[in-house]
Image (tube, rainbow, N blue to C red):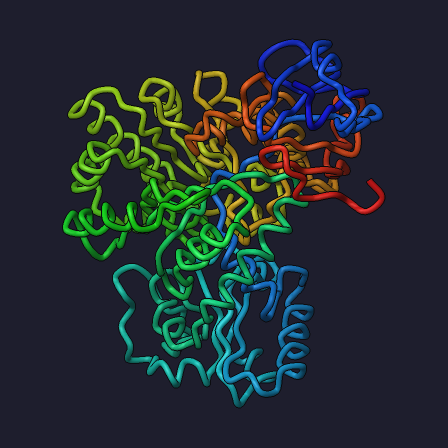
Length: 542
């Protein structure tokens, strides 16, 4: 049988053996690797000349939010603004261009653009005084609102902080317009929801963007509704049923942190109802804590103040740590994968303790729990990942010494604890399996940008000092995290490497990153992307 596709003339990163220079694809599967691939050439075989460019398994993102990302791109997109002035100008420009929009929504602004990471309602009031404005920041753990939005939500100086968040206030006690964590829902629930057609369009727009970056599969880290992030499940089902979902997607069903084990039967029902075609809702997302920049990441020891003294704050546990082991044990017994948001060292320990309890109660399983973000990990917990079979789901693009580190993170962690941030190298050396993701729209979904930071521990533009160089990864280890590692986390065992019998989910880069210096990895682009042997992206001029 002749191959439908033959890739030849360039290096192939198989991840399973020595580099080869030819791969044959028949139907949706790889049918030969190496010299034998050329023997399958026939009159109808499409030959792709790699011309020295690298062929490798398709990238997989193990933690992202493509539907909210797609919706934000269609609204007031602030991801390109770098300063407070640029951000406010962008809000004004969007509002002026959309005079009939009842609300100004969107988001993606950078905390480091504003002093203390907290903009105020007055700057929004100056450009949009007559309509409500609600704009989540880039990490979606906080939002910025104007006076009109606060008025509609009934938020005043007398409104108490919710248990899982807070309203930033000025010296007189007045809300400033910055909403942290659970306080976001006071305003977010009033913003007009997107329509099902909007969500489907956002998903397909995001999918095109991700395919252009070489991403062939992902895990949506929030399938449900949460503080202004709308449930994307109807979009996935519609795309899966109509055949427009070309990626392979795992959905992580949202664990309502205001409830307990009584929601588990509902999750079982949703798993059945929401699994169709290339979409499978087989994971459960448990958000254990927040983020370090606003003091909600859960830490073993207290945060410091600006003078370097211990405070009373150790962050927030959104799910009761005493009950978490029972929840995870029950989910594991039902065959669910547990996908933890665990950013601070106490949240990481709580997640690992829960996985250990599930292992002790249920015995070995193939549920493949994974912990995402891992900004601070206590050294005692690093070897537990391998021992418990818990995957370390890393977001490499964050592991660089950006200004935000100096202004909003390191002073409040302290010098010693700050050295425990994003310990990718330590985790790998301990035997942990690494998966990788972006948390898009929190940060860019471009795997090659993430790989650049994982290898170099500096930003893709080369600014700033090398951040904890002992935690750098080698290029192959970084590629593996974004391919085989994430494929493992996604239970996509027929993907993630170039081998005979595997699904032909493949990407062709515009060069061979191994042939150049590590400092140039971030300049690499994607030329071709295939899912199951079908071309889903071709760069102009490819």
